[in-house]
Amino acid sequence: MGWFVDFFKWWKCWVRKIVHLIVCYYGPKPPKGDPPTSTQKLTIEGYFQNLKTWSVTGPSTGAYNCIAWSVGVTNQWFWPGGTTADFDAFYASYGWSISTNGNRKYKKRKVALYANNSNPNDCTHGSRETHDCRWDESKLGGLERIMHIRSELEGGYYGNVIRYYEKHDENANLDLC
Amino acid sequence: MSNENKQVKEKFDALFVTWEKLIQDPKIQLSSRPQDYIDNQPYREIVKLGSDALPFIIEKLERGVFFLNQAVLDITGVNMEEIISKDKRFPSEQEKSLLLIKWWQSRKRSQK
Image (cartoon, one colour):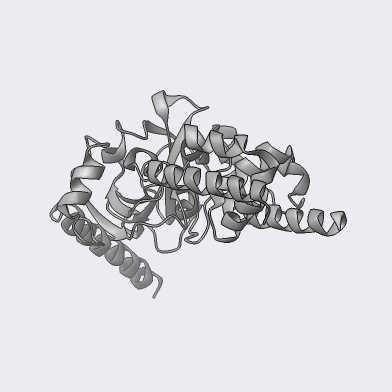
């Protein structure tokens, strides 16, 4: 019976890998949200020259910001301070630990912390991996929440990713079994 | 309301409208850092109005304009760290507003 359980696990894992390949690499569209309007494209892409593939997943609101969104809060505005040390402590208080890289990880979700000129004392933004297939979601200050490929937000108004955090998520990246 | 207070209110209202318009700029709206919303002339002018403007600023805090937290701190010299409860290490801007409103109310009570 044991061999059957092992075979089933192996089979399930391969099905997940194949589905992931098909869904993620042959459908390069955000899996969630509405296509941006021409005004949204004009405004937002003007500040993020690499942003090409994205959707709008939440309306413009000043009720919460990127850092709140990155820890799953949608009714508060958080800014723990400007340095990575401030953010390390903040994310630790929500159960996120420092991660060595931004690669997808089995049963883990990641948060990326951005800074201007890669300066650890000039943090600007946080985005959270909310969907398999490399998709992050970012709340853009007091503007909309968007779904995007993480790297496409880099090199613009928020600078580049300087730090990653990770947290256990039972349903995350199961294709990496 | 005394004439002097009326004048302060008029100045505050005018500066507030200018400031609110200014922070609608997408370059500011894209930011999550409170300092990007307050590092401008109208905000500094609001702070310059001093303690006479505090009741009007607190009124805005009560309506959810949490970017005015810093104006209260700058005018009163209150240290936010001192009024944050020890178990709340990272209060949100909205929570800071609530603390400042409570602080203001208790100050008013003690002055009576």
